[in-house]
Length: 370
Image 1 (cartoon, one colour):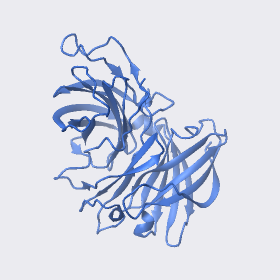
Image 2: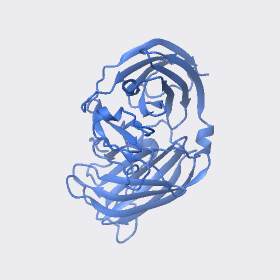
Image 3: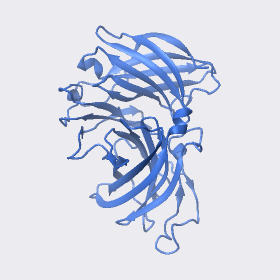
Image 4: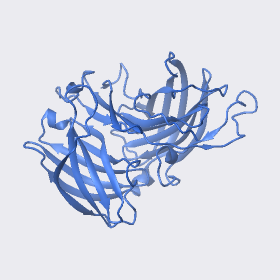
């Protein structure tokens, strides 16, 4: 296994929200440091009318513009190298096939065997082989992971390939946003593993849908992007994972300052992720740009942390996701209760590094989960 893991935040860019003919345009990302030396994060925003580079403008609402605030938290990945297995006996004999699961990419305790679709299909163009490994459909989300290798089996240098992805569901282009991670899977830097979590809007994921993932460009180091076509079509059904999701109502309100109310809606737990959904109401533009965090300790003693993953400034809806690579990982499935404390911090008014100066909001509370 490679001792160095290159994080996604400043090296992987999704094209899933950017198109001149699209109904919404993606705002330029402002990279932020979120975890010291191990995890980077990026804040993304989308707006229907104007693309604005300045972070302060991300917090402003113009008419009915729809805006999302997102950031990426890259997770550690592992890979199982299956030696002596090749794509074919001739043209691709130099390539060592790599089996790399979503559970490995996200450092999950379970292998998602009951919910994943194993694709294991390769597309080859411009000297690169991309292999779509697995996909998992979930509520408002599609998670995919794939590997990138050179057709000649040679090293790709010191920086993972940058990819540009487009996702279609039932033929409809998606613009909801994406976050993920990227890293070399071997010491020789011959294979890059990439995982993406696409945020899906206005789509019934609790049924079988037809998906198309299109990669149209790759880039190594500072070289010019290699334009090509790596296309994958597949079906996935999120009904089982959605049905197996445990939902615990919270319904607690907090007023960090006059004129703003934060309502923690519910805690949801499944094999793919743990999240806390929330809503911000009666807020000004400045207040709407706050990031939330929950520090939690369950009745077994496990400590976990939920951090803002998605926030929609237009509706006030968002959710915090368990940053499982921190502290003790997940809330234990045998835990009876979990104690939670809410914290908040504001985005900087100007572009720059995010502050870790979170302030406690309200009093800690205990939530019964069984």
